[in-house]
Image (tube, rainbow, N blue to C red; front, side, top):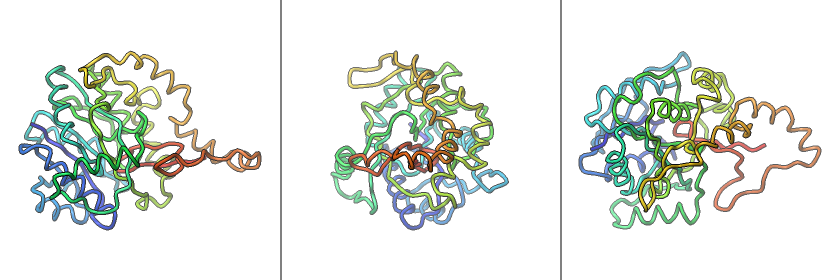
Length: 318
């Protein structure tokens, strides 16, 4: 079956609610699923005992104390009980269709990375998992009141052991590590399969109190810049739009639009930390000229860019 692995923030406040929702939902995906929770964050040991998770308290960190995602991936591949692994941000809820899609992908491809677009939803209370309708209800909430994010928001990565044997030093809680993972899979000649048409992956919205500069810091601080450099910059950062295949109700098909994804990224300045610095410098002039941010989108707040980053959903407005 599958080993799901993740890391979390402290299990307090709203973060505690949505992380517990996510982890509990994963335990219901399949009787044989293994879940590994990395980190000694407050409450991690307790939730692991309660839900029967495998708790690995130790995580390598950089000099800022930020967890290294490269170390987590390496360690997970060493200790996982199953040959199929999936890293997921710890605020995601998956329907049973997730495992069905994974079975289809593993049967079709020997070397693969399964990814998919997420649906953002406002969830502020514990889910009632005792209800037979909990999955249908949360899925309806996401589709009716949430927002499906574009391909640059990548929150889960399902693959066979050994796909990620070598990774540069990258930290979670900042951007760019997720895009490197998609690029690496393509460079390893793996099939990158977008299962968005079949899997309603639900991201529970949250804030950025963990960073003193909020969402802006996640994109622009020293650690974000280091992730960008260690990953290799723009040309080593792919998104779901670069998927080689798409899985839908008719089966697996080639994604011919992937050939244009690099050009689209090149023409999209926001996939570059320098773009945000440009926005900051020009904001007074643009506002003086009457250039205002886009109006709010239905079902969510005003958004110019969202990104998975870690368990984070980064919002930027200009």
